Length: 434
Image (tube, rainbow, N blue to C red):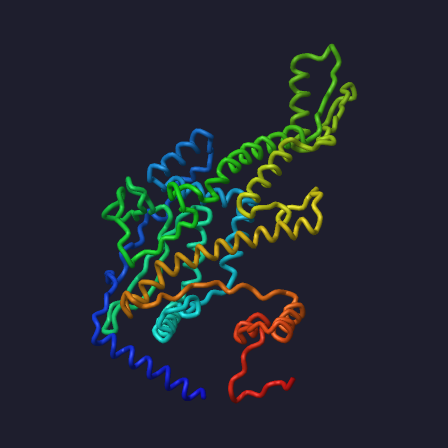
């Protein structure tokens, strides 16, 4: 039976090739082979706009981004994650929930009906093999995941042109400081020849990931822009908190002198007190009364700077993860049930990130790969993340038993093997007898 099915599939493939040979096929726009965006020395330069950031300066940077100049905003976003440990943590958690999953290329025949299964499977297999040859494809996916914070990430498709047509040889991330927008809010890339206006993104040459671009300007909507004001407030609070700790965190040193002390003796006594603060040692006359007053720390309400920093951390957590209980439980009154509800909210965000990433990869990577080889009428395969198996496999096995034995639900064998983590046996392999 397997041999008959294989022969039937081969026959359909041969028939399809004959039909395509005699029928004119619409071809995709062939891009130029090789790299278009070359590295520049300026790509490593940074202005560090977060140093000494003020509300007015922040407003100028964001307005410049709205006008199409993204350089200062992208450098600010990069430095925000470097300077704020909590912001880096929640941003990395959001991205890792996506990039930590394995990926796969799925035939269009498995996702929709009415397509040529043989052609769809062949196109998916071709795209799968080309992506598997790219050593840095996972790094490219991590670069595209940064668009969750910046709302845009661009990578260049590098093609090889040979006798067999165009083949994807490499995908190279484009530095964020080289991105700009024109007057119609279309993304452009700054080059050595066009350092100010940049070049337009030609078809089938670039991957452009804008996850929050349903409406409005593409520079808006990124979570780092949402977090910018909280970062600025926390920056001021931390600075004042450090000054407060330096001044009021150490004991106050008081020395009382005799009324008959001269001005020179008073200056000498003051110098001794200052030396006592830095060296923790000093000598005083028996006539000098020395007193150390310990400062009061916080009281019941705690430091106002600590409370402000905690509030701003919670705001960042809600912006990135939709909740706070899975990132910070210090002093929280939430229960385990509330934490589980919050974690489900975070999974909803991950599923949304998965859909948007899959849409971008299918449109900008898999579509040109398939159409340049098989023509415009080819069913384009899908890019999909593999969700991890549930932890309670016994519960899943019980559900499958009820579904298959009692409810008569047709469960795909391949899916069941994948979810249970049990590989499918080969024809010559021995299996356990039930």
